[in-house]
Picture (tube, one colour):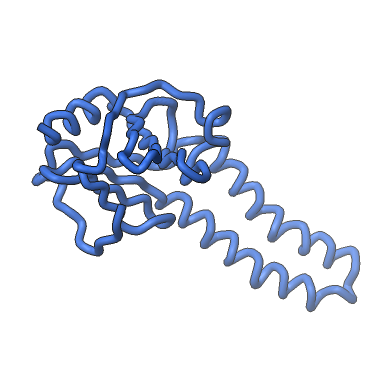
Length: 170
């Protein structure tokens, strides 16, 4: 896998998929954290007037930082392109543009997996030789590479994704 700055155009790809973070519970957790970041120091400042400076600093710094984090999570998306010679993956803002040459793939399989049990959840997961890029759901394509590493790329259309890679590899 290598890093390249130029992204392919979706219309030039054999297969293209874009996924966004969809877990409502995760969004609620972050919004609750923002509210607590702002509300907790404010309430503490009402009860302890001598802490007003600390209160305003916490609200003034913590609130915007938390808001930026929430906005980044709302904008998080993973895009996958299957081209003639490689699979391109971009998982913004976590990773740049990864290129997986098709000649490095030993085998692949569309799978249903258990994100929490197998990888500890969603996102960029795994350690060592078994990694996963996933946004949501429990379907994806698992790749085995010639260097004995594995990568699972989550997909809402795992069978179509896998078929597109197989066709491109011929």
